[in-house]
Amino acid sequence: MKGKVYLVGAGPGAPDLLTVRAARLLGEADVVLHDALVHPATLALAARAEKVAVGKRCGRQSSAQRFINKRLVDAARRHRFVVRLKGGDPMLFGRAQEEIAALEKAGIAYEVIPGVTAASAAAADLGVSLTQRGAARSVAFVTPRVGEGEAPSGWARAAAAADTAVLYMAAGDAARVRDALLEAGVARDMPVALVESASLEDSGAVTGMLAHLEALCATRGAGPAVILVGRVLDAAVLSRPEAAELARAVAAMKR
Image 1: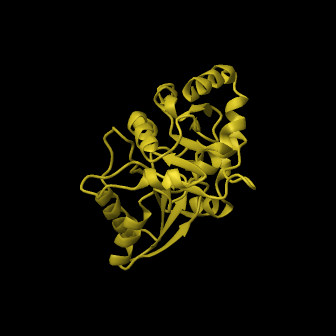
Image 2: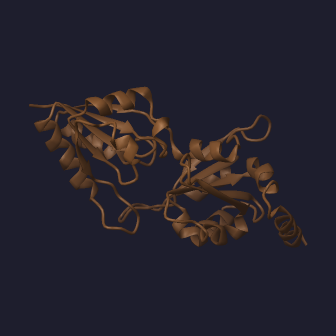
Image 3: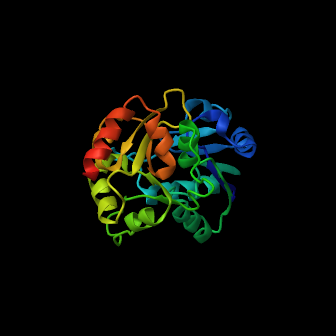
């Protein structure tokens, strides 16, 4: 028997940000292979399904991608209805293409169900539009993460060229990220925001300037985080309690 695999976006965290289609598919699934950060209430929607944790977390023991690919193929050969539940949107830094390639090679049907990505949730939490008429007409989603054996990435140049940039999987290496952006031409006083656990009740954000990125990221907890960079954040930075201190720091940089 060959079933069908649905690559489903679980969104940034909050269960009620699932798409209607994603919720329906979870309820119909025979087996769900899910990422580590999927909310328990989201998993609870798959009431009749076998649930298999295959998530990856930076710096922690986790499932190798080739193992996940094999589990997907094996599950589709045993079950009619397989859901691969991935955080955020499957097609954005979710390694979905590798899973799609494995399914195609095995001759297994699949369908991709988009999800809300962390950048959108972070912008919503901040109340800051990633694009703004007359000010920000381009957005770059980038990650400094480079896998073993992969070619160097031009992520910093892409981020510097955009009006607004959102950095995924970057908060754990803040000093290198800051230095790379500065070398790419981003100003030291460029506004930045670190948003952790976007869309969840315990979501938190800190804002400041690129020069202080390492200190900002040192305040984060254990939740997933994204970094936003761009002038669209000016108002958000100035509205924070520490705005006066930041203004003095900007003035000192320009002397």
